[in-house]
Amino acid sequence: MHAQTHDLLIRNVLLGGRRRDVAIAGNRFACIADRVPGDASRVIDGTSFAIVPPYYNGHTHAAMTLLRGYGDDRPLDVWLRKYIWPAEACLTPRMIYRGTRLAIVEMLHSGTVFFNDMYWEQAETVRAVEELGIRAAIGVVLLNVLGEQRIREAQARFQEWGGATHANGRVQFALAPHAIYTVDEALFRWCARMQDRTGCLVHTHLCETAREVLDCREAHGVTPVELLERCGLLNGRTVAAHAVHLTPAERALLAARQTVLVHNPCSNSKLAVGCFDLTAAWQAGCRVALGTDGCASSNDLDMGYAMRFAALTAKAAQGRPDVCPAERVYACATREGARACGVDGGEIAEGHLADALLVRLDSPRLQPIRHLESHLVHAADSACIDTVICDGRVVMQGRRVPGEERIVSEAAEAAEELYAAVADRAASGANVHR
Image (cartoon, rainbow, N blue to C red):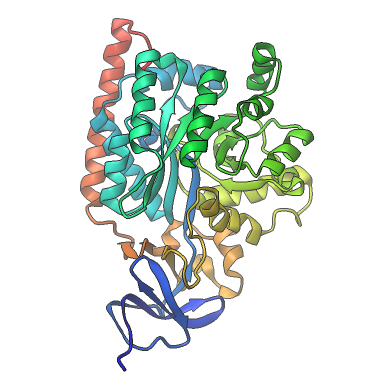
């Protein structure tokens, strides 16, 4: 009887404090043991590494890498109206493709294998994801300001794509109604019907600012949470980004409906929209994942920073060092983030999707190695990550993503084209909307 041949075998790697062999067949962890018999198409010597779950980013606008640092340090309304929206009106499909490729390289370098995206020109995002081997939930964006014709086109695009997966299951399509202040109730109800029909994710911004809540009360007579409940969108397949301004009753309702809240601690702080109460959300039983938001508002896509900032701000807000323990915030970025978007990953365990990081045991930031999860939250930086495995494939090794030099160069060119177009548009006095 012949020993099984695997596709990828990592020998003698540190897992849970023990040296183990980890074998991958196809896109799943097939065998984890002290010694895995047999051979593999590819073998990695894991002696210098620990194997840990990768990160799943719950809220992004990936192509906004091209807008990194643009309009920094200005009030939210000024930032949006004077900087971001005019710039977005100038984006072309090629710019979005190049910006997304840059985002994926940055995410891989910092250990992320999945992102839940809400942005324009979704076909370009799909192309970038397929080429670079990462996972994504790609939202078809809906806003009333687009006008009836473009809304119908977006709806038709989702009905063509929705409910299906692509790239061997690495790409799923979601609906992304932007927010209660840009999407009317009829369009939210349409999203609820499509979700019922297809089981898709619905990804939206929720209660990001205090003004959003006040305006919703004035316009609809209810809060944003109550409006989504009225539309039938509070459920376990809805992902709500930010959720900063919630009442205790709303947290209880969101927990009962199993709606996923995505905490974006760096973006919330930089835009000064308020502080998500992570402790209260956990106490209410809410499902919580972590996100970075886009690079225009958080300036990076590093989930390691998001973990650390989430933990530290929660401790500071409560005045208690014992709240928000490292292992729990790490779970939000890994296992809980994967589950939030229906991905069977986030754990190094037989039968699960083969997503993993190999982190360097010789990194000064990880020594002594006795408290690895704490180190990953509070001490590590992206340089600790040597190898990224997604869907059973090595997509970064030795901190190199294939073709990254060209990807970075082309993104820089795209950014120059974008800023030139923004200047021309401003000179012409054109409107700011896409």
